[in-house]
Image 1 (cartoon, one colour):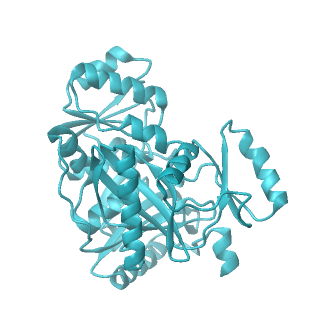
Image 2 (tube, helix red, strand yellow):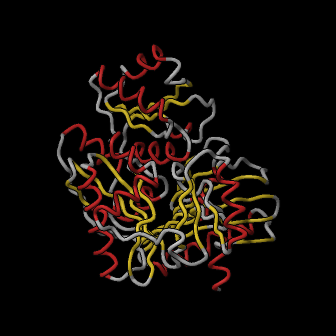
Length: 391
């Protein structure tokens, strides 16, 4: 099967990787001449899907399905129109995405259906998390610990031209779960645990997640309730912070996310891109086990000179296209822009094992080998400021 993926950056890497694992022929479209996902594709077209409609239509006439990996509103609308005219399944729920792409709209939805969320400012104490309503991931996220920082960050965030959402910082594990649904009736996939760097950018995804059965049940119930209210047909990621034993929903994204799908694939064998293709082509919900067979650690590293650092995912943005290696240094797989002799490169490293302890042992061996091979002297694994304060 030939699948078109539009957008070759972080989300596009996830989509192209999983499509490749499903043995699809990946046709990648991006206006950037050297997108991150370039080397994961079977075929690449440098094209602006909004400003080059004829070229885009010609390329899409050769594919069976289209998966958008972009958050550009104009591009998403144009792609929807192309697919409608050509009769190509468009693996995207525009209505659900329009709600999930606004934290203000999402929070209103959560309030209407009784989903636990962090308390909004000023009905909470410091520290508080501040973020632009329409940005995804960690972009623009600020931690304010007092009124002075609150006012300072308000001024900074206002420059983005977006509404600011300010809510309590929930100090506890961060968990994520994907829901695949057909007309609102969904199934939850294995839960992952997220760890962050200083800028609250996800640096590591771990399976299995550390949680009680009660937290797991509450999380999946909330995720399925949200999918039902949205009438979701497609995929949605639900991220929560667990405070006082209660998973509080931080945000949702009704699109293929990055990082967690690859971790889930290696832990359970569930390929979310393959499941989406079956959903939209067959019109029925695919079967997916909710449990994982293996433990997984997916982690991002940056090497700069003689310094090795664990970093958030956005460090990959703007890098050269990533190569995929299997078995490198004892890791299961490595995605990296490394070239021989380079002292400035990044890598996403995937390590699996029979248990979390086994994964940690393999990770230590990988890091030690990496440090020896590249003569690295310094290693850092920064945490968010609140975690550092707590210890």
